Image (cartoon, rainbow, N blue to C red):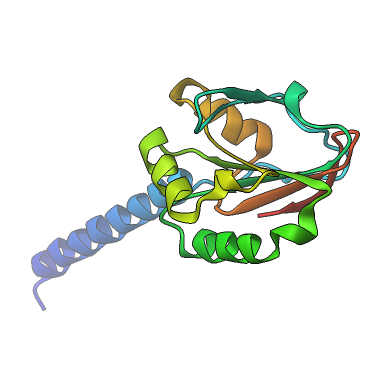
Length: 164
């Protein structure tokens, strides 16, 4: 055996393994993993979302006489689409609930989704998007790491259920 060839091959293998390890570490660091999850002790965070109709909705606008379903969705998410269809089919069961559907996408995509399902025709549903400057704050405040993510708040704006 020629020791020079083995040393050369060994360094190549070490280099390849090191590269793979570095890539895996970078991938793991880039994944959005929540530092913590919402708990029942969490109150509704302050927020400011733009409604599709042009108005703004804030935490102070939430109807305190109703439960609030705050639902973060993505227009290209198959599960979000299926859940939206289920919501439309059972919306009459949710008369005592204010439903705020929110997307982190741009207004045109959210408006298209709204038009497709005619969501704003439903009196208890508001469809909104998060303006660019508020996206990071919204993600951190609500601890969003996947879509859909659902939050149910009682009349005191205290979290009852959190479902990522």
